[in-house]
Length: 363
Image (cartoon, rainbow, N blue to C red; front, side, top):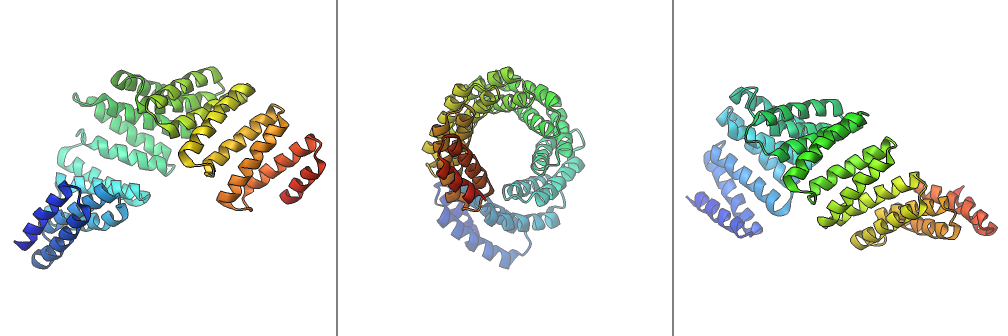
C-alpha cells in the first residue's frame, strides 16, 4: 500500500512538472516493489514510468535507458509477447538512437518489428513506424541501400492505410530522397523529393518548416547537378519558408547555399551579399567567436579574393583565422590553408613582409 501511495503521489507531482519530487518518490516505490514483488509487471511499469520522467523532464536518455532495458527484461518473461512489449522495445530503440548507439537501436527495432509481424501479420500498418525508424538509423550509419529498402516497405504500408496522414508519407519520401542522394542517384532523389514537396505544400501550405527543408535539399541537389537556375529557384523558396518560420539557423544555412551557387556562377556581389547575411545571423545566434561564424568568414574571404578585393579578402581571412585558432588551436589544418591564402594576398598587395610572415608561419 505504501508503494502504491508513492506511485500515485509521483504521478501527481509529474502532472504539475515537479520532476525531482516525483522521481524521488518513484525511486522509493520501485525499491519497495522490487523487494516485495520481484520480477512483476508493477515493477516493470514503475521502471518505464521512471524512464519516461527522465526523458520528458530532463531529456536524460542515458539515465532512462537502464530503466527501460530492465523493464523490457521483465516484460519478456511475464508477457512473452504482446503490443505493450513491442511498444517498449520501440521506445528503447528510440532512446538508443538519441544516444547514438545505432547497433543497439536496430536490435530493439528489429525485435519490435518481428513481434508485430507475429501478432498482426505482414500487412499490419503499425509496422510502418518501426520500419521508418530503422531506415533513419541505417541512413545515419551510411547503410543507405538497406535504409531505402526499409523506407520503401514503410511507404507501401502507409499507402495501403485509408486513414493515413499524408504528412507521414511525405516524411518517408523525404528520408528516401536523402538516402538516394547519398547513393549518387540524384535524379531519382529529386523526383522523390518533388513528390514529398507536393504533399507537404498541399497539406501545410508554403510556410511550413518541412516545406523549407524539402526545397533546401532540392536546391542543393540541383546545384550538385550544375542546374543553377533551378537550384536558386528552390533555395529562394526555402529561404522564404524558413523566414516565415523564424528558423534563423536554417535561414543562415540556406543563405550559405545560395551564396555557393552564386559563387559558382561568378556572381560576386550576389554571393557576398548572401554570405554577409549568413554571417550576420550566425553572429547574432551563436556569438562572434563560434566555429560556424569562422567558416562564414572563410567563405567571404574566398569570395572577395575571387572578386579581386584584396584588402577585404585579407580582413575576412584574418577574422576566420582568429576564430579557428580560438576554437581548434594553432595546429588546425584549415588554419594553415588560410595562412597560405593570406600570404598570397599580402604579396599581391605589395606587402612583402606580411606575406613572408604568413608563409613562414604556414611552413
